[in-house]
Image 1 (cartoon, rainbow, N blue to C red):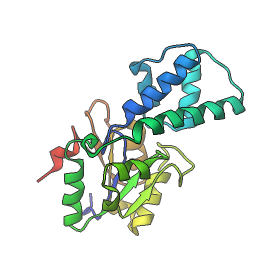
Image 2: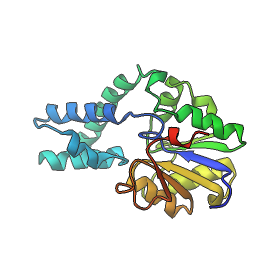
Image 3: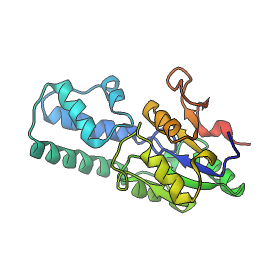
Length: 210
């Protein structure tokens, strides 16, 4: 790994845990469609786009919907999700996340977000860390989902840096694969067995504090 000049963070599971709110919204939708949706099944939706997430949910429920109906339900799910996250407070930041970003900034490292979330800006503002980012690349600027490296390549470009000097922080296998495909050093947040392709694995950003 060359010296890190840019740090690119995924949002969910790295900086904040909004996964529970996604789960509650998808579960509410499943219940409305007449079936249950477990936390275990929800693992299949991690790091996956909203379009694909609904497809997986419908597969689980054995339900066929027209494209028009699917669009309606995606919007409904997002409305419920936004209701959940608009009350998020700074105490929902994951342990060490803000401190680690500040540590990197102090060292002169540029900071970007690389997330599939279309609500990233709202979340960062609610958590009072929006101003810490030099660039934000989210679901509104990318068309290809991870493991495609598009989101991380755009983040490096937005920072004005080459991929080789950027480090990605990811908690999902698809995200780790995207970081590697972008030619970046990848720090996995989780366990080595869940993220075998990461260059380094830590339990959380707090482990990187000095």
